Structure formats: structure tokens, C-alpha cells
Length: 258
Length: 263
Image (cartoon, rainbow over all chains, first blue to last red):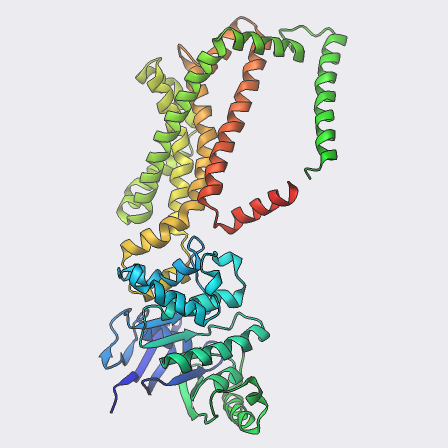
């Protein structure tokens, strides 16, 4: 059996507050196999961003354990790529230099990665923008640069924290198609956090449903829709059944507030 | 705003106000030692430059200003970085810095002239002292203002603190540092002139002082004119550097765009 990409056992995170503490995550357990596209969906404050920060090594858990590809997480590591909600580009770097940031940080030879950077930019349709600066790009284009940057050092997996949450609806649908295409081409594990139920069902093969206070996984749903999925898949009865099922979970548990 | 019509109107307004000044001074027979007419000021200006007197003093004041600016900015940059990066340095040094900051630094000029003499050194030190603070404060704030998300990104890449400083905090502080340089340039000129007032052998400040004793008001006006042009040019110089360094800064870009639109 292949090693699991992500394995989480009884993971808890408590945030200290004035009146004791609040459980952002309470004894969460799941595992994700290599190459899977998994989405976590839940309302704001359900702890999904906390979960991602722990997996990215940016936050230490209060209890339980988490490991990536068989080794326990002990801080940031170089075999993952992270995409945040905002593109977080450096305005003084060109598109190409932004993409190469992880290479600069890791002290690897830029020259060796230049062809890869150009190929990746071509993959996301930004080949002719490599000499531009971030402020010359639209929001969707900036986020594509961020995704390219997360892929440049060829990480085994991508952690994405509501990467399209700040985009308008049309751009967002387009980005969903792009991401599906990238995933089908690159075959990397993707751990994708969102608060949009349709986005989660459209993108992932498996949807983890989280509810807040305390943050828990209440369902683990496999979505069996053929790939590549066109946007029209959203109008099929199967798609509707999945989204209805997830929405019902939130209605029982106190609704979506985002 | 900069249409041909507006330029014409602006030139006409300038001529009208200078003309009115000239006319009113002549009409009411205001004595020259109270308010000289523009023609007298122009004459003083021409005389000063043609005799080589102004050039000699102007170059001396410029030298003091530039040396003071460079020394003060360098010191402000270094100390600002130290305070921003090190908690102990901040803890032990910052209270004194704040105390010193709230002091009107021109009041130190007499002391500095006593300590460092009537020559170049005291002027440079006074200019540097005044130019130092805007750089110190802006460097400090700039280095600390790095966006949390960008810091998170760098951390997620397993970047070291040193890398976060060189790749993120330092470039991120540049808009602040450039704004500090902008102010420091003018402050250095003020510092040099004030120290010359107190005691000097050369320089435009000293010249104003001696003209004042001789009731040469036209001469003083002509030097004020020179000083305002010098201040403007120094400021423009810093702004040009700033535009080159901060080509990526959105606020800078807006300004460039606005200028483009108006040009």
C-alpha cells in the first residue's frame, strides 16, 4: 500500500480566550491517499483554516498528531506548496520572479528551474506576462501566479486555503476548471479548503464536511462524477444530490454563516 | 490640470502679483529696508551672482547640507534597523530616542557650534542631527510593517529570519525609507542654515545674518529666493530617485499615473 499523503490522528487545537478557551479543532482524524483531490467544506470559524495552518507547519496543534507522507509535521517543510486566499505576491518582483521565490528561499539554482517556471506559466496561460508586475494583472491572474509559485519546486502536494474566495463568480468558475486541468495533468495531492459547497463538489473526489464550535468532521463524502468535469455538471441530478446532502448537514448543525 | 490654458493663466497670475508688489511698494513709498520692490531683489540677485559672492556661499551651504543629509540618513537607517530587529536595543535605546525626538533640535545649534567650532563640522553635525530622525522612525516603522500574510508565506516556504529580512522586510520598508529621505533632505538644509545663523565664516545663512546687520533687505530677499529654489531642487532630486526605486509601489504608481494624465 502506498504511503498516505496526509494522516491526521485525534488532532485538536485550542485557542486561549478570556473565558477559558475555544476548541477550533476537536479530535479530528482522517487520512488522504497520494494523488487525491480532497476538499474541506465548512462555514467560517469551523477551524478549516486552522487545520490547513497545522498541516503547513505554521501552527502547532494542542493535541493529537499529523503527518505528511509518513513523517510527522514539525514545522514548515519544502515538499508542499501552499496557496492562500490572497495571492500574496511581492510587488517588487516580476511575475517570473514571484514564481521563483520558493527556489530563491531554498537556495536552489534559478537557472535550473527557469524552464519549469516558464512551462508552468504557460500551463496557466500567463507565459507572455512573465516580465509584468503583479499590479498589472487582474485578481484571477494574480491567483494563477500564486498557484504557479506553489508548484515551482515540484511539491508532492498542494494545500489551498480558499484560494478563489476573493474572486468574482465568473472568474471563480474559470479558475475551478483551470485547477481541475492542472490537477489532471500534474497528479499531485490537493487539499482544498472552501466554504462553497458547489465548489467543493465540483473539484474534489472526496469532500470532508466540517461544522464549527467545536471544529469537527461530520461527514466524509466520495463524489463519483466523471472527469474532466465541465461546468454543466453542476446542473446534473447527481451533483444536486451531493450539494443537497451537504447543505442538509449544515442545516441540522446550525447553518452556513458564510 | 496642466493644459496650455492653465499654464498661461498661471504665468499671468505670477506676473500680476509681482507687478502689484512692485506697484504698491512704489505707490506707498515703502522704504527699501522694510520691503524692497521685486526689481531691487532681482538687482541684488544679479549682483550677488555676477560678483561670485553667492556662488561661493551657496556651494558651501550645499556641501554642508549634502554631507549632513548623507551622515544623518545613514545613521538613521542603521539605528532604525537595529531598533526594529532587536528587542533589547529597542528597550534600552528607544526611550532616549523618543525624548530626543520631542526636543526642538534647532535649540541644540548654539551648543554644537561651541563644541565643534565655526567651520564645516558643526554645520554638518547639526544638519545630520535633524535629518536623522525622519529616517530612524520611518525605517523602524517600515521594517515592522511587513504584511502578516507575506510573512506567513515566507514561513510556509521554510524561510529563515534572515531570508525574511532580505527578501521581504527590507524591500517592503523602502516606501517608508524613501518618504523619510524626502523629509530628511529639507531638514538637512534647515539644520545647515540654522547652524550658520549661530556662527559661521561662510554659507548663505551667515550671509543672511550679515545682511541683516547692514539692513540689506533686498539682499536677504534674494537669498530667500535662492534657498527656496535650492529646497525645491533637492526635493525633486529625492523624488526622482524615489520614482526609480519604488516603480512597483501602488501609491507611487497612482502618482505617476496622475502625472501622466495631467501631462
